[in-house]
Image (tube, rainbow, N blue to C red; front, side, top):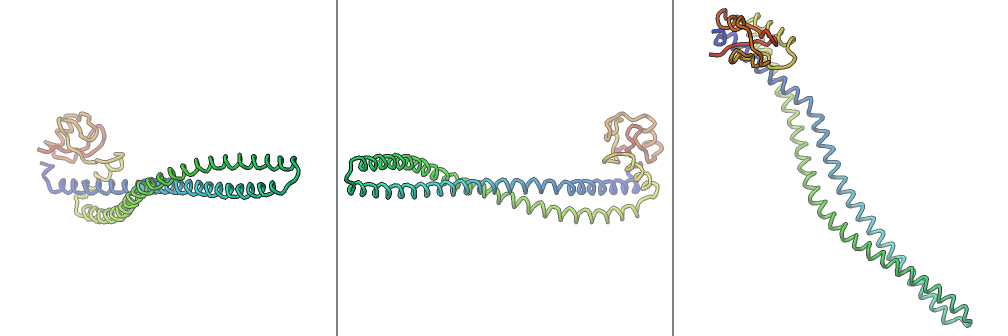
Length: 238
């Protein structure tokens, strides 16, 4: 039976190596896109941490600025109260009193703003702690994934190189007729598999029924046969 012949087994071996090489090449082609996705995720995680750090710094700067403004207003109020003790005229005294009242209102507003800002600082600091923990862990995980992908790139290139040598060796050892037919089928069929079994009189490559002539060619004439629907090499294993 053709399936059991060494020439056909050599064809199956070549086909298996070919499929592994095609699969490895496809994975290698897709790796740059996968690497880019992982790199983008790392940047997003780092930006999240950086944003939390920036927000905290901005709030701390605002709180500090408000503190300085309050201290400055307190100094001005003290100065105006000192002036009040020195003035003789009632209208001057009242003018200073009004100015002091305005400064006190301004200071009160700043104190309210400072209190609210300090509460936001506490929240931002807590958020940063969470972000630095959670997002840093994610960054480490993604960086490890990046290393594994780079290692996979190296392994795939090595595997493809080895398979190319094995495919070359298989081709040199194969029956030239089988090899020519196999190479012709590879040009006709768009994607693997190129060699498939017939099961229940259906080609397992295209899942369509093959003719009785195809079955006869395989079983009776024991010829290298292609599917009359998709053009793949077909065989029957018994």
